Image (tube, rainbow, N blue to C red; front, top):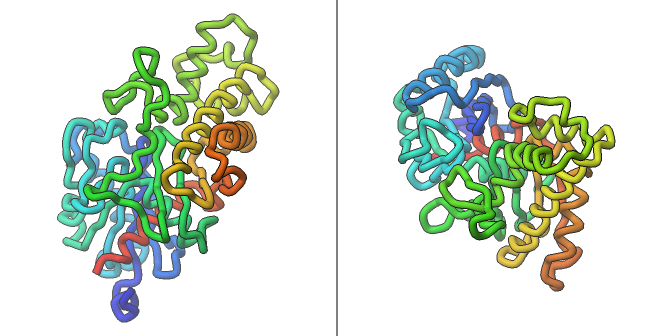
Amino acid sequence: MNEQNAAIKPYVIGLDLGGTNSVFGIVDARGEIKATTAIKTGGYEKVEDYVDACVEALQVIIEQVGGIDKIKAMGIGAPNGNYYNGTIEFAPNLPWAHDGVVPLAKLFSERLNNIPVALTNDANAAAIGEMVYGVARGMKNFIVITLGTGVGSGIVVNGQLLYGHDGFAGELGHVTMVRGEEGRMCGCGRKGCLECYCSATGVARTARELLSKTDRPSLLRELDPEKITSLDVSIAAGKGDELAKEIYDFTGKMLGEACADFAAFSSPEAFIFFGGMVKAGELIMKPIREAYNAHVLKIFKNKAQFLVSGLDGASAAVLGASAIGWEIQ
C-alpha cells in the first residue's frame, strides 16, 4: 500500500453484498471501520435502482469522513462476483442479477466520482477478512464457508485466494449432495445442491418438510410453516425441541460430509464458518465435526480445525472487501 496515497486518501469503502442485506463500511488502513450503513438487497428489479439506493445511503457516511475526496477506492464482496471482470454473473439469489451479467464495479465507479472499484465473491471477501483480521491470521491453507441466504466458500491455498481461470473457483455451495429427482430444486436451476439443504433457507425448508411428513410434537408447530426461519429452529432446538435438534443434526451431517470431500482436493488446516447459522453453536458444529471424521479419507483425519469466525456480524466480509480496495493500484 502506498503510504503517501493512504495519507491523502485515507479510507476505502467495503461492501458486503448479501442475498438479504447490503452492508457498507468505510475503513482505514489499519482495518478500523470508521462508519457503517446498510440497506436491503432485495426489492429492486433493475440494478440501476439498487445502485441508486446504495449511493444514497453511502453519501451520508462518506460525508462523515470528509467527503468523496478522502476515499481511495471501493471493494465489493458479492455472490457470483467475478474478480477479473468486476461483474456479478447469474446470481440466483439476486433478482437484478439472476438472468445475466451485471457490471457492478463499473456502475459504482461511475456514481462515485470514478473512484477505482474492485469486486470479488462474497465468501472470498470473508476469507480475506479472516486471513488479515480474524481467526485465520497466520494460516496459509483454509476454507471459509458462509452460511446465510445461500452457502458460499472462499478457498485459500498456499496463502492465496483460489480464483481459477475465470474467477469463479470455489462455488462449493453448488456441489451436488443429492442426485436424481429426489434432490431439491436450487435457485441455480440444478437439483440437489449443498445450498438447498445447508443455507438458512435450506434449514427452514427441512423444517417444513419434517412438519408436513410427521405428526411429532414440536414448538415449531405453533408457527406459520411458511414463515419459519432458521432462527426459529435454533431457538426451538435450544429449548430442547427434539424435531428442531434433528433438523440441525441433518444439516450438520450434510455439511460435514461435504467438508470431508473438500479436504480431498485442498487439504485445509481449518474450515472456518460464519454467517447467521453459526449462532446455533454446537447444535450445528458438533454434527459437522462428527460427520467429517466419519467420512474423511484416513490421511486427513484429525488434522483440520473447525472454527467459527471471531469477527462480529458482517465485519469479516466488509473488512475483506475493503482489503480488495486497498490492493487496487
